[in-house]
Amino acid sequence: MTDIPIPFNRPFLTGQELPSISDAAARAHLSGDGYYTRLCSGWLERTTGSRRCLLTHSCTASLEMAAMLCDVQRGDEVVMPSFTFVSTANAFALRGATPVFVDIQPDTLNMDCSLIEQAITRRTKAIVPVHYAGVGCDMDRIMEIAQRHRVRVVEDAAQGCMAHHKGRALGSIGDLGALSFHETKNITCGEGGALLVNDTSLISKAEIIREKGTNRSRFFRGEVDKYTWVGLGSSYLLGEISAAFLMGQISEASSITQKRLSIWNTYHQALSVLDGTITRPTIPEHCQHNAHMYWMLLPSAGARDRFIRLMRDRSIHCTFHYQPLHLSDIGSSYGRVAGSLAVTESIADRVVRLPLWIGIEPYMDRIISAILSCVPSAGKP
Image 1 (cartoon, rainbow, N blue to C red):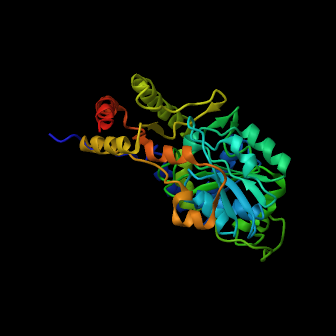
Image 2: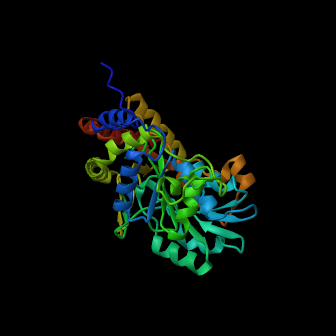
Image 3: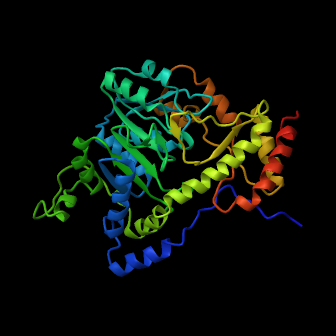
């Protein structure tokens, strides 16, 4: 009998999503900034400690807003890792800036902070740390560098909801932070995001950018008697139906995080017997991660690819991750490399992500047994 296929990801439903959507429909406010948008924004502000949370239709939208808020112009430079999703670079390249790619650390796969300063020039406008797998970058060091060079910090915390660095929520430490609620994230509404505005001087401008360049937010708060075009912006709001779905997820955020951590820990403990053959994730002492993903490194690209095929033969879907941006035609055209990116290129060839979703628990023995079988086989020439 064929084994039941185990997908890489399966969105978790709390059971509160549909009642919230029905209630949103009954309230007859389906565009953005309605009752559920305010509930979600308030919860995120209380939970993260951010001064202002603005729901958006994607993390990409939040990053684009951040680029505008940082006043990124043509000819500016923005320091970031190459090992990240294209949105990190796109948001700033769309403003005419040059992404400046630096290498990552081999233990956390986060940007190597020791390389940031050498990438900074007089054109640098911002540093964009990416919190890979919900594990925080060394934000103390990044903020110190940024303050010394008088540049902004935009946290790409797409994977970081419910994760912390020294007790502070990821996304709430830099000037701005971007969260994702995409289907693949721990907390989801299918497509969605949030911009965390931590510098209070940027709040008013952020509201204008998000509302198509108008002061509509002030109008709805009764601060002006009509609203009009007051600046540049676009349509970045999340619809109320999606916000209602998100509230159904947020209501169980702590439980979701704990369940995912339990699965992550099961992997981490079981795979310790492969130390020396594979490399497992490292979680720094100052980080409380959110179990967004479980990754491991195999000895070579060939071993990684064979492992993925062997696992799929057993109906278990594992996958690789980012292709380094600097190696793409677009990345080499719009960006530049600061120093060697040898670690990035090696990691990208060898990393594999394992299935991790709530409901996978009954299949964990089967998955781990398959991994223990496939890893040695994958390493054979």
